[in-house]
Image (cartoon, rainbow, N blue to C red):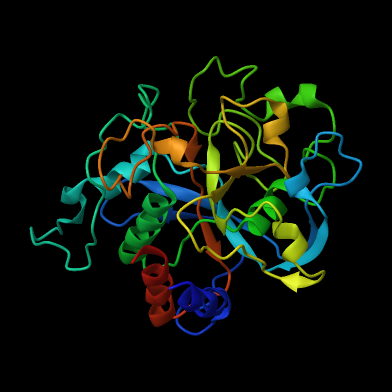
Length: 319
């Protein structure tokens, strides 16, 4: 399976046949048959320095050494995926067509969580959805593809960092002053131990809200502490290829984290502690009982892959 992924994933990123290339500007995506939509903003591809500068006094060993990489253009969700959006996926009735028949394109849905994955914090449908696994996030993307015909996924670490930095090289896109973080993020100092509705703080220059704080965001990569030592300068669209359930990568920090965890280059690693309260054997593929601080954000590659390559991508990641 690992070998299959090594061939499929880069091909999916680069394939251009299939859907016509869209105009590269912000847009809102309506989920057909519902009143729910979400906003996507363009992130122009660029060559940039991945990782922390040696001058960053808060840097960690896994953020080094910096490497110059090239990332292709993509759209990214202006907001973290909300509970309102994710509930469409978990609600089977959302795939009943107008004539009363069942949409034949439906896919498997999450089982009911053993414990409330938000630990009582998810009391508002405009708060980010939390407590789901990377598998759950990608399954939502697969369902969304069936509903919209457009290939959405979660970002690679390199894509996430390019979008968060917004052309800067400082620890935060707004500079070095940690005291300014409260203008842009919900984190340990101002969140009062609570999740918050998306979009209440200022966005970064790319138009991304809550890119720091509120919830950490799943990335597509396996987490490797020495990942950057394996990347070649000038490498295009790097990604830590998955080969195990743990650890996987997340970014951005959450409402429980201090300011150092919210830096653009900070890397977060999943652990089996995120399922500590799950008594099931095997443990749930869909839910983490103890990661009420993790959600996700969508990306859409500018160059859309073919239908066949999309299915290969999802089958390699989910089956």
